[in-house]
Image (cartoon, rainbow, N blue to C red; front, side):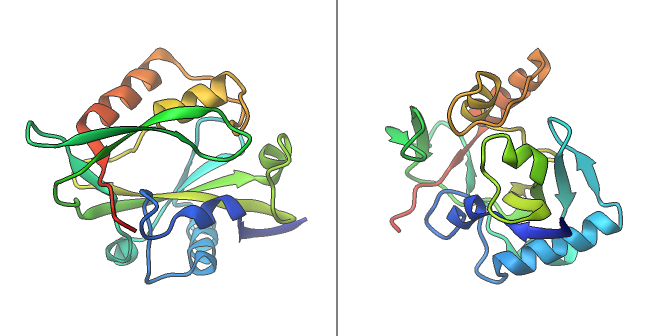
Length: 189
């Protein structure tokens, strides 16, 4: 098995207008290469389960990533949509802000899954040991972005699109707390 970090097809959804963190300055391959370098230097921590790693992006690259969040305040206009992430997954309620200023990224985390974890649900798209599946541009003052409650639910209940995981009550509370303070700004793309 190739020990390099490859690009999983799932991360390719992170582009301008997607409501996800994105970059127009780096290719997905360049991000995966950076993840490989940072992991080799030890700039990572273990994720929510064995086989998931969170890689810290070098601060010299942070400005190349766009954070999709606004801070919620009494003037924030919120909308809800009933959406489906992928065809074989359950629908969920998605909240977006219709106004506000995007927060600058202060930190970026790259999420890697090991081949064994991805193969549990046949979600690997390469033969590499690690695959980049997501990246998060975090706003100022946020040291760690908790997984979204819908993703946690999908994982813990082992629903379609989830990767088996179990979360403690504090992890659930931190997730709900974050998503009560920050929301993705809706774009017209």
